[in-house]
Length: 323
Image (cartoon, rainbow, N blue to C red):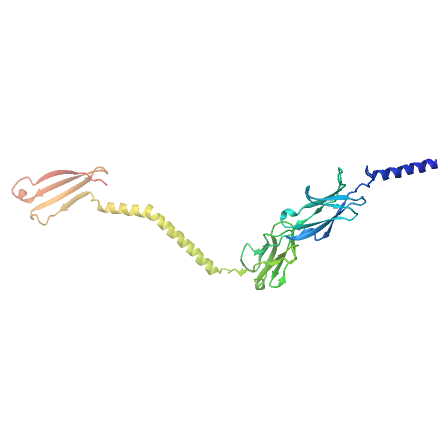
């Protein structure tokens, strides 16, 4: 029984050794390891990085191929057990991303792939802008300040200052949005000069914002409020008068003027200074309809009355009067 166990163990070791060799007796390659040997995974423009790819164990010669998103970038044949080195220059945003390498024997099918390494391009941040919804404030008021850098690789860290003293903990923004702080204006000392600064992983890249000042809002006194109220009332009266003139005052004035020019109804005595003393003329105006009026004229001559004749003669005349 012991002999059978030893025999099975021997055949098992022989089988594993056979699986590690190819048809021509070479040891098969294993999954290679891709390692960054120069530079960082957070890269800047024009930066050089070096990658190392090695399969252990494996019998040389071995062909190593570097891929970026399944597209071949470079290849290297190694006749010894030393790793293949690949040097890259990050010249544009298309050079960053995920890289892998492949190890295989020449003129053979298959091969093994390594782990992946991903590069991130660092961009310098632009000058941040410090702003607030209001530039005027008064004591006892809450205000806000926002700091935002439009360009630059994330994350971006912001810090707020009043003069040379920081007034809040730093805020690290993982998204492209402004950092906001809330302030309480408690005294006149809070009306100072504010600034913020921003930085990211880009080396030596700290930018300061513009200066921002809150101004003290003037508080209106009761007399100012009263003056403003009286001014508004006067303005409303002027507007009402301007509207009343064409609709009420002008028609009323025309009606009064027309009434004063119309002759009154009744008996009117008309004395012509050029006529003789013995002649008197009476006129009687009798309105009939609004559209027209009849006027009766009576003429009495005193000379005829002295002569024994009938004293008066009546002449009727119709006059049409329209508005």
